[in-house]
Amino acid sequence: MQLEVCLAKIHRATVTDADLDYMGSITIDGLLLDAAGLLPNQSVLVNSLANGISWKTYIVRGEEGKGEIILNGPPAHHFKKGDMVIILSYVQVSEEEAKKMPHPTTVFVDKENKLTEVKKGWRPS
Image (cartoon, rainbow, N blue to C red; front, side):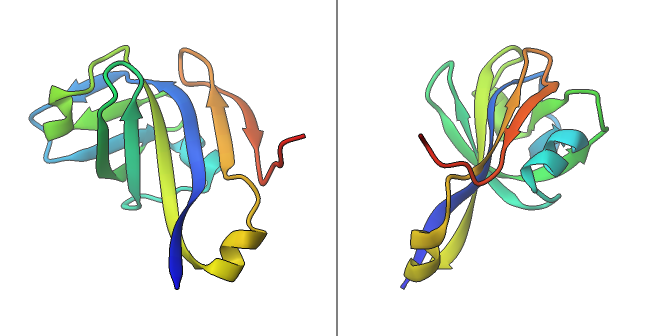
């Protein structure tokens, strides 16, 4: 049996733009991708703290250090500049692997999407 589990997340990032005319995807600052271990074209789920909408899309690597979080294409109807989001990546693993996995890598950012902390494989105390 394969289980879908959360591998990494970018927690409470701020949407910097929403471009309806782009073909689709989410542009994410390259430094945040590296910190989370995420890759271009990887599938992610984007959750809006403003309206509860969840949107599955793929990653486009943004310029490093610019703090970009841009929702492109159809999600621009639901995500607006200034909205806070949680970006989650999931992987398929066996039940045995899932039992051994710690919490996901969590990337924390400030209001300008600058990296403030990374917790890799942390466990609650």
